[in-house]
Length: 245
Image 1 (tube, helix red, strand yellow):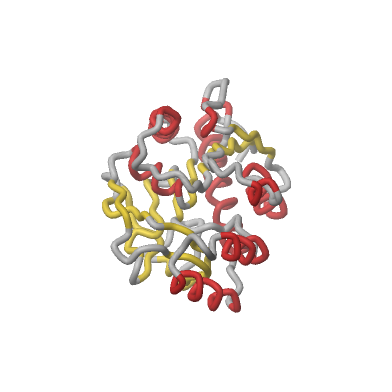
Image 2: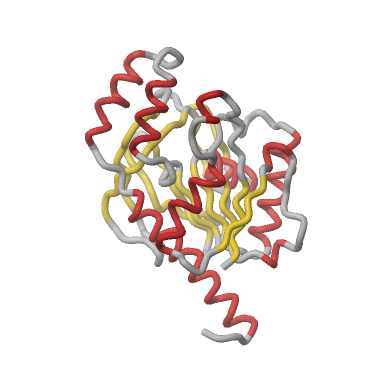
């Protein structure tokens, strides 16, 4: 499977240079569960987009970013147009955090600042009406966001939710899947990020984030869901083309 990673992370700080970029984090997360996957990375935040037909890819991932989807930057407008084209073609499309919000907004949903402020650290969310590639029950994930989806696109169904994030993940049919959370963030990176932002965020936010680190995020479980999502899309593609099942 050929997966395009649309890298939206705008952080080019010294901190970012000391750690793997999102174009490395996502293959590191998924490759152990998808040996047949190959990945192409496009820095959409720099205006770099796939230069071949979208149908040549078996799936798309939209990464997280410290940028706000409410900014309306030119690259974000181009990204939104690309996301609409991917969704219209029913090519499997996954988004995390910023990606989750960008997909929601591009397809007609709404994003706003969280009235409760920053959500930071390990949190528990619950799969509700889980998609066929998911399992029911609670799952722990890393969070780092100040904005949230407050209205879903038409035809979308909530698949992840908790008391502070009603729309923590959604699906549209079997071709769109999102999460407000960060399965690509390792515990070590989260600890480093908390330290990096300690002077920039409210003390109570930092304190709660540090306290959450004794909980292990279930990144491997979520990675399996993402891979299963892409595989069911490839299966449908093969059936439609009359190829091998």
